[in-house]
Length: 254
Length: 254
Image (cartoon, rainbow over all chains, first blue to last red; front, side):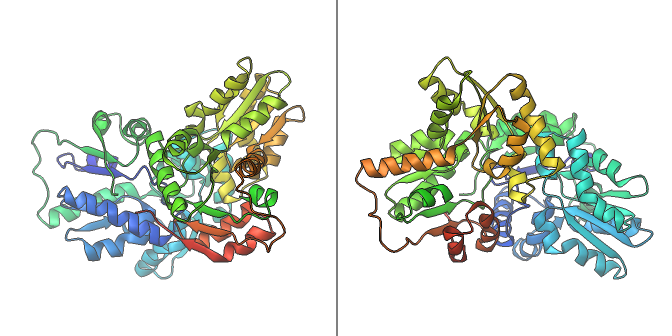
């Protein structure tokens, strides 16, 4: 959301956080597909012109289903991140960290191998990173030790590129980068995804013309709006989108 | 479930794990009440004679609502644990650790103060303990450091009793007890709750007669049954209930 709003300042964004059912990363494929379909249906009723599945687990499990079922373009976060990793690696050893679901799905491995079958992909689930990020426990000995516990195996295997394969992980970027060391390039799929959104809107003639008044973003959540406003500010800029956190709307799909 | 099945070996138990929507500990009161009501409705359709809300967060937020709405006795896990803590403390300083929801609700404080207003209750949310327990990360430097980060404040305040106010925490009991030290009595509400279940069934004339064939327990989950069987074995005994984990049934309330 933050990267897209920054990259495309003329586009109004409707953000839906399924905050009552998060985290998705520990759920089964069937459940993630069911919830992702419900989220997408709700957003389509609001007449969105393009859907970004801005969650790696939902992208890994539900992207094909949503592309088949929806009448609008659907973008995930895995393809853009995997492409960046393929461009970045020199020794063809890429590490991917993500949720249990994302790693188990094999989605990053599949996209990387479709681009370059010679690249070795080492994927590691890091389930403690999501609660650390949600709690704002972003520095100090505990996150550092957790990062080492997860990353040391990938580093020993010689990766030179590490994909942050979960939308929560950029909050822990400094602790992850410190554990990984200077020789490892960190890939954050958010920037890459925002670029693909821009390209897709342009190619389809769907982009808003620049120069108008600033767009009005909307935030929808399935749990308490006040709780979201508190945590959401941690993820969003101090600038434009955070201003709108005062107007969070509760929705549900039951 | 484990404590009840051990304490009441003649009683068949229907266990419902809302595994698609866990954890409850980070959700708002409204959402927890809505989900708890849906779980209770589903179990009542299976003709249970007594309902145990075997989750501290759901007990904290939804017990009063369920007691009003349901035609059967409803027991929570907070009252039994709070009673044990009141009996155990010598210096009248009781620590309670639980989820954000349980601590924010003030439910332990209210029950303890109803029994003895002179007892000081120091409650501390420990949100990382649930994912640590779910991941089976139960020993070593990371859980020990997390335990110290949470408990040191309570220990400095001089508690002599500590309530494990979340059904996940007994898995981390050894690391919690080590951080707390020998001078602190640990209270696990599961045993206390099982005793109250036995007393209630007896008092209402609802107890099954002993001596029959072993009862058939049932396990219902809202996410993938195979995933539950894997994690559930960590919580349940190697003995009787685990045997039944082969027969986990998927249910949903939508």
